[in-house]
Length: 473
Image (cartoon, rainbow, N blue to C red; front, side, top):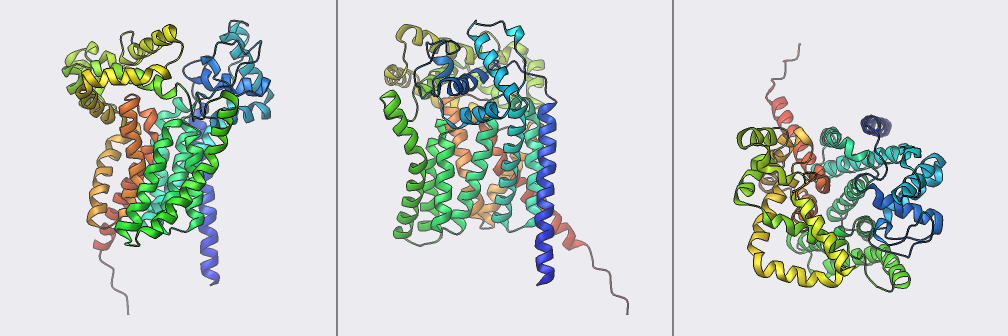
């Protein structure tokens, strides 16, 4: 008993040290990135909302309202989910230097101050991002250990997930949501694995709470609530043969926990904005921008598959067909699909002010005339979006396919259930967003788990082939 206690204590200590190493690696990678002007890219969305919360106590629509919030209070809004702006607000309260940098950047963006006066400083957010990513890595590693009942898989998964995040260190140096969504999703997926493995009410409630928080971070994760319920149905009715009654109990517990987190935000929206909805304009804007990709030519459609293979694809296609062949896939080029979609969105906003009243007609017109193009184009967009992890993706993606096949052959359904939500989000982003991997970083979880399982199995088989030396008498 004493040996078991010491072994557990040593293992716990080793994991704490591992977590600290992961944090140090990720924090260093993020902090070494070039400083980013705080209004660049999508940072202005969240920083302006946090600024409005700090100065007026109002959760606004940030840059999407018509008020200069550097000089007057904005109206309440609900375009963005509340979780990330609240985290930015916490960082502003903790670090006055960061708060001043945000205030100055918002004022400069509204043409009230000279931007050259503003300090480019976001260190507290960078450290927060590193901490969140570390929690996500550890959650992925724990899920792998639970799925395969292997300590070796824990360590291998943690290492692979950390390495897969490093190519996106520059992305994490922006004050944007990717680190939070990766972390919260990975922790929620771990809770779901625990609940599916042993469906106790407490575990299911925890999973519901975490998926609710994820929904309040980015509204698109709303789709995972019914997906999680469907996974409970698969486990209870098909795999465990427990019947409908346990499933209904588990589904109800998950729904109650999810609603307990999401309902206060819905109630706030009803009171503050007069509309009982999770968000506004968010989905409409994304779908309108996505429809621009339906203009993809046959050549672009075919070349997208080799082009999106990381590291090697783009240089080969550019050399063989010229850089203009796939220029519309690069968001910052003037005629890119992204810019065309954004321009169309801006034109509709300028003409009608709001997109939500128009979106049903926009979708109806697009589906009536080009539904087949929409469906076809979603295939290369999903293909491009799955190559997370940079050069490591060249290994992770094939090993994930191997892992899915092996899970079926070796009766490891929990791994397949673990992978389903991330794959659903991959399909959703192809349908309503674009082809960039930043939206699909949650795939690092199932990809790393599959790769670690493959390595552990190969190592075990190799060790079993090594003959044991005879004992000396």
